Length: 237
Image 1 (tube, helix red, strand yellow):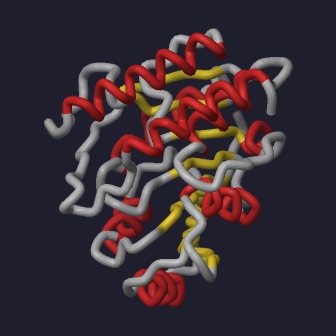
Image 2 (cartoon, rainbow, N blue to C red):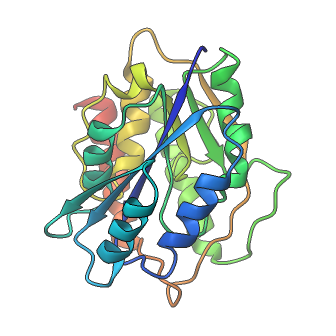
């Protein structure tokens, strides 16, 4: 793929402690020669995230900002961010430090080589370090991935991953409806239903998960919603 620019979309909600650090890591990452555009969408934060975001944008012309007056959820923030993104390749990056921009070369390579249209970064696909955390979260992720695969007829190992990378032509065809974490099964279902189906790859990534005390937000209700979204967007919407 003859790409020139990478758009990194960062949804942000109450991440003042990590936002500057993750932006620094994104700016310093190996992007395989692509120019960088960072789109930060603050989703109604109640801490100093907006002030940090605006300060970063003032210092770095590569950064574009957007604000939601009230908290709507990760999906809503990504919907806003995708509309603002102008790169040839669009990558989703969480504002915490769970996912490392050091993995960008692996995530970008299948697309830049012209072999893939979409790349998922898998926390369960061997070879890279991962922090040991919650057993039942891992079980939940694998159950949701299995359910998603049964509907999409794909063999993903980590549907719920943050790291999803798209050629611009692919993400431009998809209208995001989910406001919260239902984004993950929704986007997976809608990518799988495009015709012709995009070429989808998966690569192993590192993962430094955080605890609830450290700011983790997803809970069991989001898992229930994910099951609903798997059925809805594969069969109906």
